[in-house]
Image 1 (cartoon, rainbow, N blue to C red):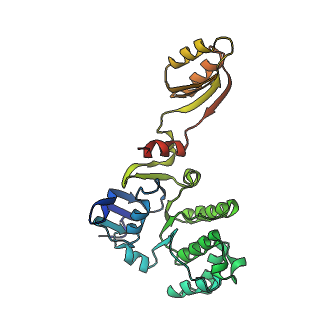
Image 2: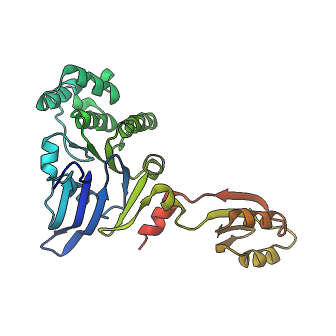
Image 3: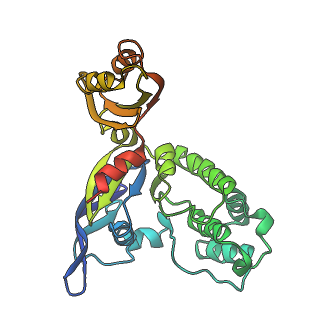
Length: 303
């Protein structure tokens, strides 16, 4: 295959079974990731995300189907430095310093000291250089893994729960670096339980459930897929039952819900519904909430 035009990552009818075929962790996944894309990979525990990522990295052999990186075997792509990963699991050498473990990784790729210093700064590790890895917190060890992953200047970077254990400031700095990496043309695939990270940083979101891809769309489109904004309001004290009855019959209103004097509805025309709530029905305390990725995720993955 001509690797100059091949997708960054291509998974074709990927299947992985365990326990002699009785358990299907991944069931026929087809996924193509183009160069320069930032893709969030979401799914509840047990959805098959990590197993799929392991096959994309060449860490696990598919039961059937294929996984390629730039048209080649993932192991070859990793060996050449074109493919790197920050995994949630996997140990680090605890008896060496942060600087030493980054230096060792750099030596594998025959990289100059200037590149090591650049990566240490990007991962915010300069002040931790002389600290033993075993003395670093979970979030700090994730930053060490990130530094090791980007040393080779990979074309594809795969992140499995990359900010696990990081505090708010560390997470913000990490994603600032990721923005710069993406702007430089790097392809990024990341799995996360922080849905706000996917919402803010991924231009495309893939959702898995029960080993299958159940959604694959631009993130904004996926958010809007539930069909309109949600409106919350308080019914008028004088005639709440009449207002509630009228509200349920309004055009474009779906999923009406009432709790005492407080109501919520989803509307395909939130402007028109809001106007009617405030004028004709004399409702008060109006709130309008746009669909969130969390809401779409819950709807897509619920049994």
